[in-house]
Length: 302
Image 1: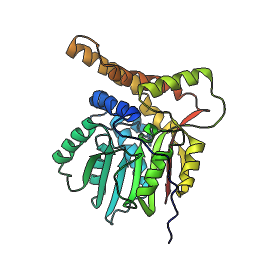
Image 2: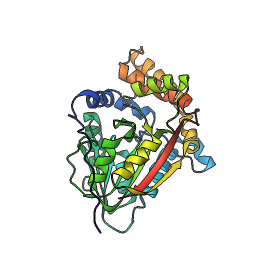
Image 3: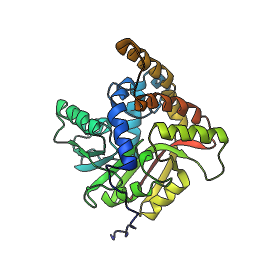
């Protein structure tokens, strides 16, 4: 079977400068605060599969991990190598390693805190032979060509540049083997039409707080997947499935602020930490614009 030629995208630039430096600094400073959202540092929204799931945020977060892995169609009885692109502290990677004993997972992040914290968990949970976190840029990595059977990005592709996320997609296509599968779970702008004034204001504030270049445009993103030789693309909107986990945001933010006030006798937080409180609260409002914005799982193969 012949491999399609992958177009060469524009250069990603130096990982230690500009937008990359802002992302790195944000997660180095605000990263520890994600413990308020998830004791296991699941740094994403959850998936509500059954009604009873609404009573446990952590259960919904794990359900989201399962949804991504299910869309990858991982075999249980074969040795496989998986790329976690934008892995945080490797929580999903470690979850995968425990569920699929023959899987090896390589996670990438540009944040020093995430590499150090994640490696500590890997050692503690005795997963050093199965999970590895490296400091690398998923738009321009040192990962080898056609090396991975599977790749996923769980709420990390939004940090890639461009509304089509072309650099990220090109890199994912490059490292996947022919026949390999991918899965992306993230928020997307649904169309190319004019957006309401308030939506644009909220969107601008959120992407600044979370240090995102922009949210992806769904149509442009799918076109870029095809451009780089990815196929069998399936798109599923799961906005209503994640809504119950989003409902935990106000309570989580309140608990976090009360704890900070009790411990430090003030709320003099660094800008990055305040932004990590503000963004999810505003995101709840943005998510109400269902005509314009949605949360999707996008999967396919090379």
